[in-house]
Image 1 (cartoon, helix red, strand yellow):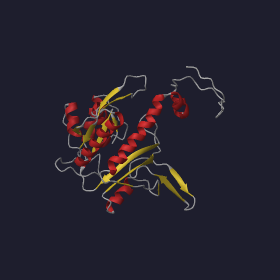
Image 2 (tube, rainbow, N blue to C red):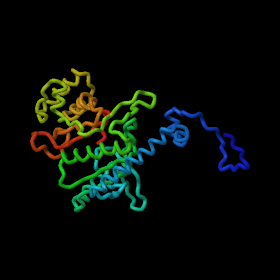
Image 3 (cartoon, one colour):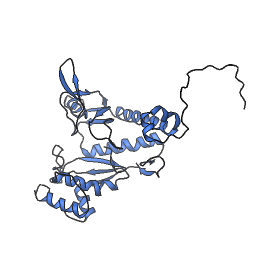
Image 4 (spheres, helix red, strand yellow):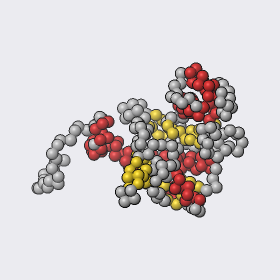
Length: 296
């Protein structure tokens, strides 16, 4: 088809020629995001799917009587998570303040005040390392429900994520390019029910050994020897919680490609968590992993 234009209107002049399609250099793509969007259709799809994820989570929680709230971004005390905060200065008050690392404390205050189900989708700031899974500022969803235990929370999280993946992608199975678009994808199946494993017993089964009482000071030496036997490096201090966490990362998390709940953390690792109702020395706590990364 030929088009014979009778007039042309210049909307904006182009001072520099665009690069050829298929921009691949990561430095250019992430520092000049407009070029990435212009030249890579897949990048636009990431933005669209991210918006769809946030829209689904908000609708899912709203339909179940959760109340969305906003809590302060600047805090006089850095709390809610173990992380190094960014520090800013409030000129009018004449005091240093901390950019929040998590909204946890304020959300729990709202639950205490009688708002039984609350959530917030917002930015958190952590003045720590940067890599493929850590960013100094990131968006997180945090929700709380009164009268629920960790079984209720696992069931709820499982339902939300499995339905979200289907709603956003059209299938419970996704192909994730963990090592870049040119590398083979990783297949991740969000079909419920998700696998659930008890941390210490699963680690004992994986290593074919019996882990001593975690309250015994000698257990740290046992775990240190276990790390050396399996060529696992742990930076000091070589405490029982740190050694155990390192072993879990090397031998349990590595197998969590499909969504997996690692449950029942020892009290030595989670002193503020609720004590387990049937496993002495353990807590009713869980972490959810997918593609070998913690997502919840």
